[in-house]
Length: 325
Ligand SMILES: Cc1cc2nc3c(=O)[nH]c(=O)nc-3n(C[C@H](O)[C@H](O)[C@H](O)COP(=O)(O)O)c2cc1C
Image (cartoon, rainbow, N blue to C red; front, top):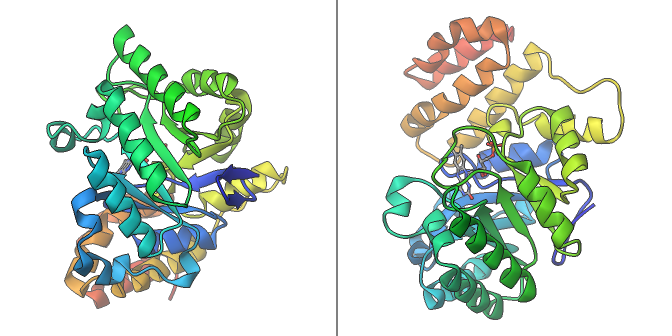
């Protein structure tokens, strides 16, 4: 069981916020395979009050999506509080504050991971958001800005004060902002945090790719949950596999090639409801590359899959390589 404020999940995992990926199609597929809570990609505070954004198919929340978390990015406490209210008004069930993003264009504007160097601002944002909405409010953090002792101290200060002011959960990616995606994630930090705050929901993130390893990381760290990120791109069935491991099944679900093909086609059909066909074909390529890596035979021919120019070509190629006649 994973509890985040009033949201109670049967299984200890969520699908992480993944900008450029975790759209409605990816979220619905995750739910289909047993992931009970998913997140939008990051939303800038100024966009949260931009009505036309929430009239786009990808942002219209349907009943089958709940509970769903909105991830919010910004630097000014008042603006963030107003944005959180707007996001709750359009139907999000949880607000996740992003103090983790390492992208240079974000850090240059002193947003996301850059704020780990500004504990006072982080806590002021949290307090104002906390006071402005009724839903759970959590934070996504990296383990610090860099490897310095000062960064470690600021990370501890943020966690201490967030817990003191009633944060509903902390999602911690065990890499520093400076590290971006290099090296490995430090799950020891997550373990230490859980030991220090046994009553606070701590969700670990970083290097979660294999179901057995994910369950092992949960056990050894004592974390309440795992945020599955890159591990779910092109492998939405990972959630079902984690459930199999958690429930002690010796046979772990693995879709055969035809089933994988059906899932890929289903994913593509859902994208058609969100974007125009040209964008769908172009945008789906990054998913196809990941999907095709799951299968050695397809891996070798993935070029044909990602160079299709029309819907018909794409579907025929998928059907051919995934044995769908
Ligand atoms: C393409 C991509 C987009 C991401 N977008 C976000 C985001 O919008 N918000 C966020 O908090 N983290 C984001 N992340 C970070 C992930 O949520 C996660 O913390 C990170 O990938 C570490 O987990 P992993 O090593 O298991 O992938 C993103 C990661 C990737 C690879």
